[in-house]
Image (cartoon, rainbow, N blue to C red; front, side, top):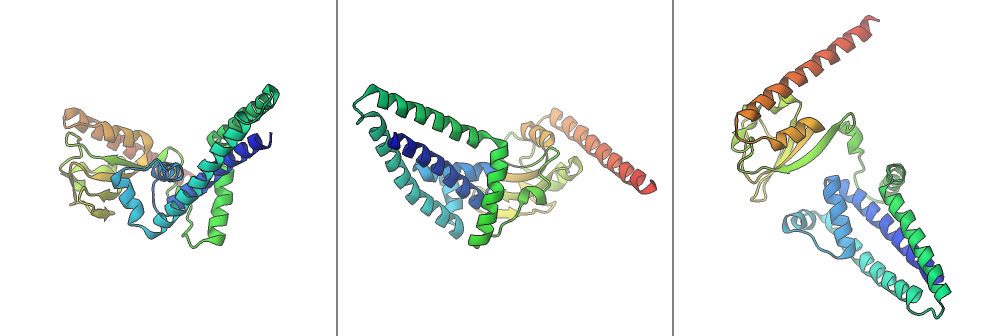
Length: 258
């Protein structure tokens, strides 16, 4: 019984630790998806790709977070294995094993629900943000609020393939700003990073671009190939963005007149 409860507590604590590490990594500039993957990989000791590991190792704060996460993860995995043995191997009676199984199943189900729950995620994120701001030197910013990541706006990363519409074009040629898309930064294959690139900057195959804009426009942008369909799609979203801006201006004017 005690071993089963211990197992549940260790798993719950593990989920909390990886959540804290994920939020801490996000505050160092990693995307949410990348931060979540790095935290879980480091905690479980599964490892991660070379390009991702370079982003971690070249940043002192990220390196410290991942190093501590690895140490905690090793202790957590050992504890989980010990608890499993104590729960299902050592008990002599079937009743004890069934009690242990029920506790483990219910406990893990509760943890799984908490991990997937958006309500729990929002509440936990607020608490962790306050703790990080109070007890660490991390620059705590609510990037979701700063970038207005609602109303279908998002930040996304994409590796540009050689047959993609964006390949070997300058930002001026693509005219993405008139679609409501902003290129925040570009990771070059050689390791260079260009933040807030200008209109004369040319995107090359293999570049990883970070973009900000409406989710449907970003999805369409990523799917465009080097053909006439891409030009049609570009014009369509430029017109859509112009209508949105015109409506926004009309609404503001109407609000002032009232």
